[in-house]
Image (cartoon, rainbow, N blue to C red; front, side, top):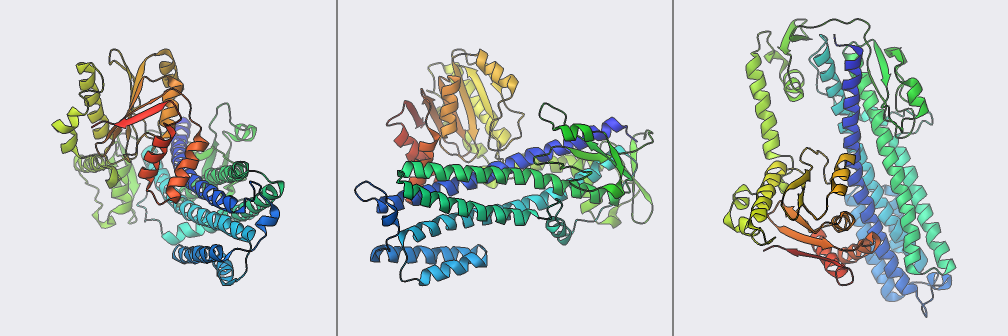
Length: 554
């Protein structure tokens, strides 16, 4: 049996991994909120334009009935909302309100604006609810199996586990764990109602005060930001609760008798978690939110098995089958191998004389295939093209130094091969004069974002005249974050290496207001342009009045 420090270390690693997955999911969720924000700003811009009388916004104008053409457009929009709601399972109460609004012959402009704002909120929170439900379900299963794997790896206790039943996960998600008796689903819809009421109140008050459209949009944006922050807190905290429930079920299944609280001890650890760290209890006292984390919002503490006795196992670990026999597996078994053998496989295939080397070779093969072919078919790189003369020629004139151009091409191919089929970005920083590599992020596993560690920031701060090169798995042009990062770090040039083979150069000599960028994006999306087209047109518009530039390398 491994010692106490082993269990703490392994289960803290599980919690850290889950925390990273939650952060990655939250970034996707934040994109949903940004899209809603863009749509709402677009709606407000359109309605404020209609309300303007002599460049003055009045409450009286807002209360006027829709004109004939406005009413026709309103009814057409509402019919579209109803169709969307039925196709995407938006709550029936809201669909009924839409149907009632569609039947109205007389409706004023303020009511119409309110309805459009609420439609965006309903869409946003339905997507949010569906996404969180799916994420929590996957988090439960992932923690259950990984906890079982860690126990099998560190002790002689093990079982062949049945696959987790979908209904079991649904029951866990529906069960309230906090003292207020509310489940995560109820919290989401309560927060949605609060957001709708806040948006409506903010809208009316801005009109009454005669605020200009920009201030009104800014005020609404702040309310959405507050709602987004609430959503982030909910994801972190509910994920912690669901994974705690998964560990409870796993511990009970494997016969663990006691558990221990393990806190992530750093400068932001709460006083409560510091005091609970190291305390252990019998499994019958396992109560999420009371004796088990999460003990507060955004809690990062977890639990691990607690064992009194210590003894070693010589190279093999036992996993007891349902027939009572003991089955041996290699001591170095990986998680995919363990899951394939003791969760996914037909249990009749288990034999005490399993060939260790064959098991490992098979597992390694699956692992390498997973890395080779990736998880996302849309970001798989065409190897033939990136090795072609046509692609190599794109790098011939990026700088005036032939050797640096060759090196850039070599590193571009390296990054594309490394991240083919994934949403993870790679990044290199070079000395622009010599081409020498200053830093890289090849070991990162964060999707859609480059993480600037303290050590990396220190390196970049010391270096001058840098060229930065990074991948864009979705093959989009430079983002506003790319331009602003180039300005803040003083890059002489930035290079985007797209997975579809496109190469962009970008430069920036000033900070660009991200709110302005969002408004341009919103406008072009509302005009029917794709994400790629809206991004390209926005950047083209911004460089007319800003000291930034970008172009595609042909």
